[in-house]
Image (tube, rainbow, N blue to C red; front, top):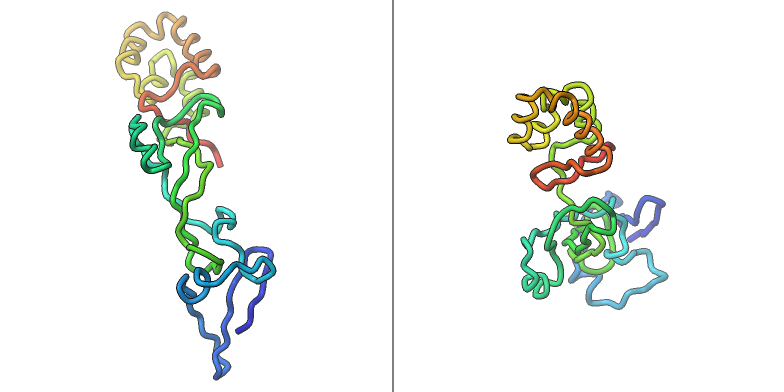
Length: 187
């Protein structure tokens, strides 16, 4: 067996006795869990791998059930928040990708994931709708505020006043999507 390390990750390459490369998956029972971790060895602890090598589940919505959060030890009581400090953090189950070799359990809990849900609402698009077609209530329709959008259409943006107020509310964060999702970040 030949072990090697690269800047991207740690891989295991096996040479069979016939000289043909044989790819195989090392399970926890064969290799990692029964032996003590050697920090000078070629394998990194699985829970130290960067997110690029992990497949993590979405945070669990506990819908405000604090008892369930205490029992599980993870989960989100509420999603979203305007400021970073307002956003709750939780643990999620992560699994190491199949081609990555590491030491320890391949499925584990990793903390620090924000309780944020994204919808189909882009801030820049909504702001442009508000500036150019806000007097027709298009910005409110897009955010799911249907009742106030109809009122805005019937009054032509409150004769321009409601139109300007909505632009200011969008910029200051006072007007958010109705479904409680956060703005989708541009990549």
